[in-house]
Length: 387
Image (tube, rainbow, N blue to C red; front, top):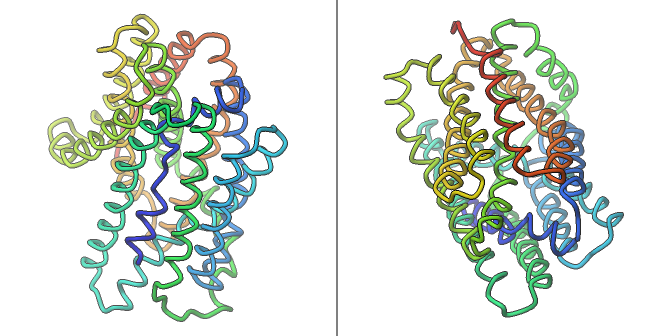
């Protein structure tokens, strides 16, 4: 049932047409679109710790079930509303629902495996299968959603709403599925008591260690700037007259390519060394952004940039996490890594308004500014020392 939960949660049929949804159905500008996403990110940051207390004190299913229902209902509502005030309210509810799921699902995967007598190695295999079912859901839903929107079965604006409605129904079904998962009995008075204190310690600890601070700022800023490509690739394809039907296949392609690059990460790091691998994996995305400024209508450049930036973002995350682990004591590792994640989310939220304003001014100049920013961070925050 956990695998079914993972699969249904990731049947996100809107994933490859989210930008057309904002611009064509809602009639938003890029500034408004990124402002809505900033609201979601800020709320997610604010809700993450309180909802974590719910999962720790009352159980994972007590968090996952209502979280899935709230998130599913939010996506369903997005498919029918048109007003900005309603959209903002839905973003807040959606962030609360998502925060109730984030982390609690992976905790339940591990605890369920241990309850069934599995070793840590076997539990890791279970977690990998859980991620595989999530990937399968996205690989099916992204192309299916973009094909449906471009199929002509209903008007484009209605189809853009329908993919959100169907996604919401699948997520609600995932919430029902999780009720049938076995969960170990937990103490209600021991867990979650010091969650706020742990969050504060994790957030401040990343700035106390000089090397960890450099790792964190490198990770958070480059990750936030390259994350923008997940929003840029759809207008890039549209500007080059690529049919919307292809959006899902492009998205599935760069996600699959990113996983293949991760499989080769060991060999790449061994040849280049961790420091050089980090530097190269941030310089190349910066250069690709700049290349888009000069050749925005060259399909080979566009596809190289989309795939290169998204793949290298995926490549950097586990490498930097491993390096950060060398600077963190065992008894505070989860707390500190949570703090690193919070810094990343803040960075993404801060970049959203600037990206929206720049995109409304000129998409080409946005790519140039993003490229210069990535290259500047790559140089100024270059990791010169490890350990």
